[in-house]
Length: 436
Length: 116
Image 1 (cartoon, chains in turn cyan, green):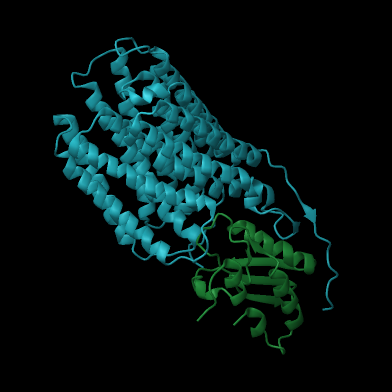
Image 2 (cartoon, helix red, strand yellow; image 1 turned 90 degrees about the vertical axis):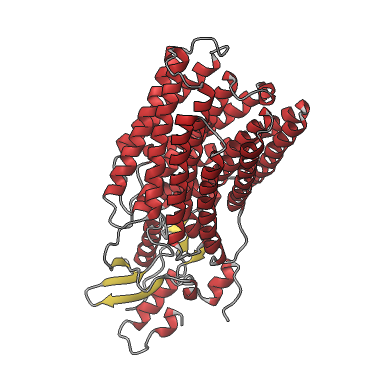
């Protein structure tokens, strides 16, 4: 009986706007990708591509992770969210920041041109938004009684996000007012990996270690694997960044990559243990997206190893980025949205009506056929894009981006259906009381 | 053994408990789509002469976001049957819920093979 706290869900304004706007950014990025598909076959320091990449990692992925994070933090930390107001302010800052920054990149015609001031302001707002996210994570986890490695992963990832957005802001400043003597492109690598391995990877490990056992009804007592993963990943990251900043990215990156991979292996072993101890029932489509995300993570790592060891042509770096952002991270979000959002909305509409009469189930708040369509279009889009890039087939790349637009529209439509859901309730007839 | 079968016929609230437990078969876990009785989430039920019903139960995972909704379901369902009673739910974590708690019917609904 001791220490029981069924955490309260935060108010909808702290969560739902993130989901809605993230879906819009996903649609926007897929449309922009169609018109800029030629950029994919060029170098990665292309301002239009930078704009699309920032829409993807901030407007789409970080936006939705913030929303889901504010909903899940109370679950993970077993306490109410520290501040719902801060959550909403972080939403406004992130939204404005992404619009300004992405537009700033888009409007910068070439490397020699001046980056606009409002683009810089956008970068600053994104940094402020990430600071507010850290405050909420730290504030919520500070009042958390029990030690939890999942909590540490999430807090650490939020701190890495702050460093990433600060570094991004300083790099953008350097575009307008050059002051950094080091190679901008080398620093860009550090900035990108701070975001990928510091923010996204650790956030996903923290959340997955809590949610996947919940969804699969599986259990693992091997929490020490997560502790090892935490140590290895952060050691690898710190060494990579320090060495990379002081000496540039050298062959020593392989050592840091091995540390990182060992950490990922520990996390995978933990999840395998959960999977082996789950209720053995068919995986629904949302969990199929999760499974696909892990396959894409494997492909991303393989691409990274190839780049570190053999330094292949520039397009392999585009493939690496595509696998990480549109493969690993987007697949996870595309599935997990339907494991979180319908439940959040369902709780708001039906929590107090449960048991009183006939009500829909959370999975009935969205269209299963749209989700199926999303699954097939996404497969065509992602692997078509990879094949198109490998084979340098412009037509295949264009056709795949059309599939991506289809994916984003079917996803967006389902989000609208969920967010605009109206309560459906058929009152039960009260039975006659039995003789007592 | 299912809770219903554990009821003693000489229990002064035998009839009420039987009806109450039968009603709880209608409370569904919204994530698993299986009722909470077959999932083995309900550990006990007490009726007091002061017209109180106390349901001792657990959740499939600590701090489940749907925990409140499930508790509301229990209260609403029992209040339909016993409108003059006060219903209270108590969540306990020991003994922890495990797959062993799931009834044969529950296993069938979850698509699991039968026990043993």
